[in-house]
Amino acid sequence: MNIKTYKYPGRAEWKVLQQRPEQDVTSLFDTVRSILEDVRMNGDEAVRKYGERFDKVYVEDLCVPQEAFNGLESLIDEKLIHAMTEAKRNIEMFHALQHCDHRKIEIRPGITCWQKSVAIEKVGLYIPGGTAPLFSTVLMLAVPAIMAGCREVVLCTPPDSEGEIHPAILYAAKLAGVNKIIRAGGVQAIAAMTYGTESVPKVYKIFGPGNQYVVAAKQLVSLTDVAIDMPAGPSEVEIIADGSANPAYVAADFLAQAEHGADSQSVLVTTSESLAEAAKKEIAGQLSELPRRDFIEKSLSHSRIIILKDDAEMTEFTNQYAPEHLIIQTGNYEALSSGISNAGSVFLGRYTPESAGDYASGTNHTLPTKGYAKMYSGVNLDSFMRKITFQEITEEGLRTLAPTIEVMAANEQLEAHRKAVTIRLKNG
Image 1: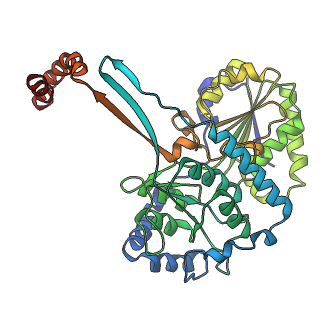
Image 2 (image 1 turned 135 degrees about the horizontal axis):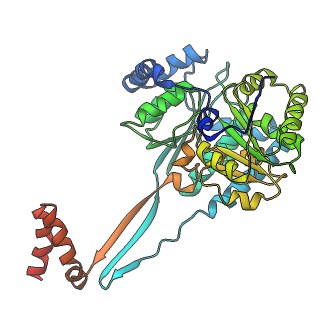
Image 3 (image 1 turned 90 degrees about the horizontal axis):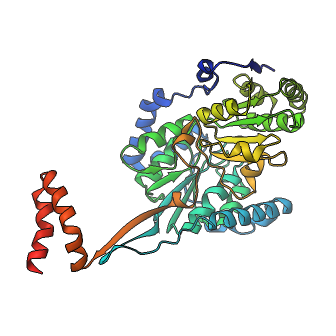
């Protein structure tokens, strides 16, 4: 186990300590562009071709047939069905609070403005393959999409070696209300949702995590063709702890994040040397019992423990790092959290593990990584909506507003803008 501890580094050293594992996807752009263009030109057949090449299976019918949704309950453990149902309920409750009540506002007599939220009509959800079915991400993306009122929700996920989708993925989609599922993964899936094919509808916005090729594909298509949820990088957690924290809990959270993948990062920031040492011992002990030890050890090689002088330094360090997940296990966590301005999702107190947000507390687990929490929010109900503004002006209102418009238009040398006002006032 190779976790470095840094004691009381000066601010000049913080930038180096805040560096993430490198994931420069620009070197993949040429390869990704060729796949995107092939799918754009050749549709389903190109999607099948790349599925055969990368996923080692040729899928004739890309769409999961409706009969595949029948009898799913018999294929899934009853406890998992109950857990998914409970998680969906909590996700719905939290996201329902995000609905906005838009009121008409009379800015001046005769000048009324208002705003209306409307759903993005067509959205695409990407669910990666890999060693485990990410049915939790299906719920995190599909539930708010359906709640927002998106008319068409398309879900792409790579099939197994038999060309099938894991029953838990199908059940989560059914539970959330999605029934358009495409057996395709990787760049070809992103391309299919971007451009549309014979089987896959073109969407307006794409959501979901993926490997570096998927990340590169999302970046490229977002330049000209479709919106995406946010830039993505490896998953990460920062834990703020003091001497009152339980080292076993800290270690468990540290390892839970490292379990995501070899490029994940865990950072412990503390004011207590004794807590840092105890947590490090706990990490070593708990690691020996975990089945994904190989992944975790690679992640731990770019994870770190940092000892700082006081709460002020920990807060400043955190706001510069802008973690995807932030766990605060201190005696004064409420006061300390009030100073946090840059984080994706924050977990407060010793009984609030990050895995609660990953699965079932109700908040969304699709969050900004790589410091993007400084300028991006995690996925929420608004992510699936647009806002249209309206204004209605009476003759009285226009006469009130006219001098302001005319002076500004004249000074910008936009005469037609000015005349659009004056012609109305002359004609009455």
